[in-house]
Length: 296
Ligand SMILES: [Zn+2]
Ligand SMILES: [Zn+2]
Image 1 (tube, protein in one colour):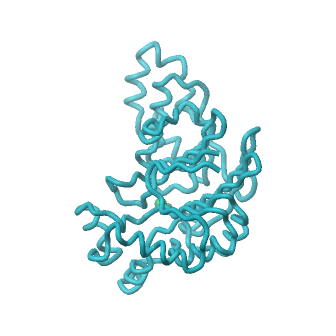
Image 2 (cartoon, helix red, strand yellow; image 1 turned 45 degrees about the vertical axis):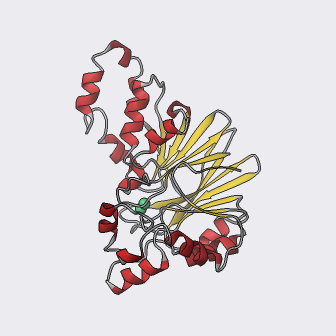
Image 3 (cartoon, protein in one colour; image 1 turned 90 degrees about the horizontal axis):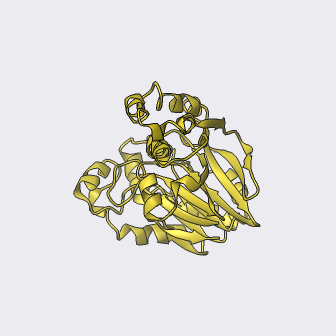
């Protein structure tokens, strides 16, 4: 499996980090985990053909994990893709997709483009085949098996959220999605060759958010992540969904200031986060950045 991180930021708009998306390439096919803004553009930049995408898995319906979906689908239609895109997602995915294309948000665009003969032969691309995710094995073909586990991020009556495990050719990659630290993740990611786990806020931001009454329940701290990675015995770890605390952009820093003291923000905080993860986990470790590629 060749893994490319197409987006590694949290929910703010950040010039240095696109929203969450991970491309997993196996032989000539690609499996996409989430599709936040910038994903399709970064795929092409990374020389990953969007037409090679075999299936897309949406871990939850926060916009920073799904907002590039119309770009991907309409772009695929214009590129001559045939067949309905296959999209796995939590309950609510079908309704979200139903509001996007013909008769939905992009109806005018589609009616305008469909006037041209060369756009009329593959209109099925605009009708994705949406399939529900529930815990357990959700997908299996001759290259990969995908298993989902429930994680704890948004109240489930609003949206279920799932972590995903991909197994291919004896190798295992686990993606946490957005979640608080869960003991169940230790079992789910046990002995994984690669764990890609969120570490949205550094410890200092978590303290700041707690003191200022901003919720801290829905994400994992670097110290907690270190313990999960150690206890799961993962062979390598990438911390992702970076909450913009390393940004040097003045607008991003201003927006992030409600989550942490702005004077501690900056690239130097990466060293502190690594130190916090290393309190428990001593294996190979990287802090995610867009277009980071790793083969397992
Ligand atoms: Zn997110
Ligand atoms: Zn989220």
